[in-house]
Length: 167
Image (cartoon, rainbow, N blue to C red; front, side, top):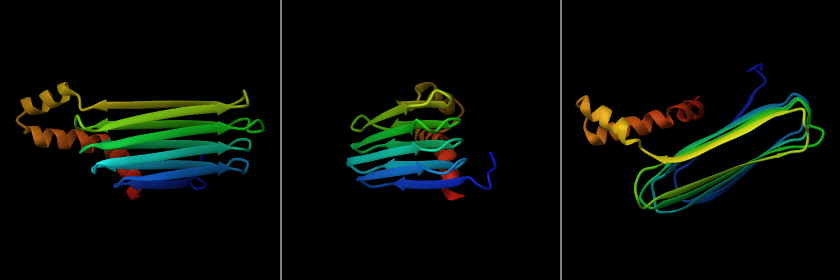
C-alpha cells in the first residue's frame, strides 16, 4: 500500500464518555487506518462504537484500539467491519486490546465482521487481560520496584498506539 494515499484517523479518550466513529470507504482503492487510545482512569462508563464500512472495491482498512482501565472504570469497545456486496478485493483488520489494572475496573471488547462478498481478506482480534504476573516477577527479580515494573509493562503495552497518535 502506498502510504502517501493512506488516510490516518486517531482518537483518544481519557474521561467517561460515549464516542461513535463511522468510517465509510466509498472510493475505489481508498485506504484508512484508525488508531484509538483509551486511558480510563476515572470511575464511570467509557463506550466506543466503531464502524468501518467498505462500500467499494479494493479498499484497505485497519483499526487498532488499545487501552487501560483503573479506578472503577468500565470500558466497552464495539468494533464492526462491514464489507458490502460490491466491495471485492477489500483488505480489512480490526484489533482491540484492553489491560485491566485493578479489581474494581472492567472492560469488554466486541469485534464483529459483516461480510457480503467472498473475494476479500478480513479478520479481527480482541483481548482483555491483566498485567502478567510472570512479567512482573521477571522485572522485580532484576531489581526494579513493583511500581516501576507496572509502569514499564503499561507503557510497553500502549507504546505502539501512542506513537501512531503522536505522529
